[in-house]
Image 1 (spheres, rainbow, N blue to C red):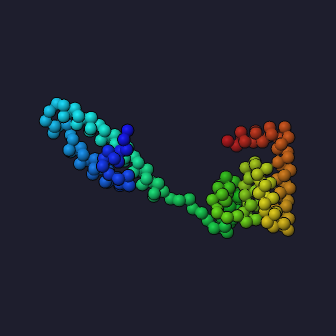
Image 2: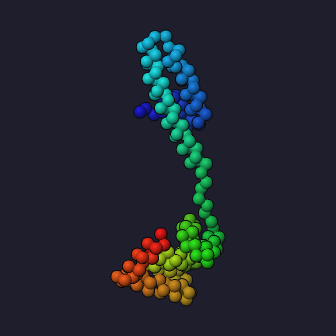
Image 3: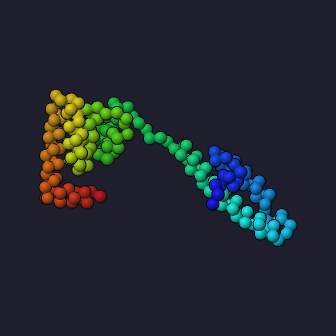
Length: 177
């Protein structure tokens, strides 16, 4: 099928209204009822079908462009706001939400890594949590809370690697879904 915008004689940047007006103009010109001969009527009928298909496709494309242009962009919080919101979500045991909020922030500090580790622990992903806690410790080596969390996540990750730990982790994931 030819480009629907070319078929309708409008640019690809055309609005829905421009597409509609072009379609109506072309339909009036080639409608089978206004054609004098039988051969012209058949040709006009084929042209009308092509115009209808092009019109539907062009409308679909313009509506997709319009909805993408007006879609709200994901809100990105500042680092301080992100950490504050994630800590509140973690207190409410909303680990998925806390992790999503943290991932949408454009920057990270030791608190961010620590909170991310806590969310991952809550989601039963101790190895990833351990990595986050280690980053927090690297950024702030004197913080004992970060060190304890890293050690705890490391221990949990090792337990999860044992056969019984893997079965327990699998059962926990199955029961929580």
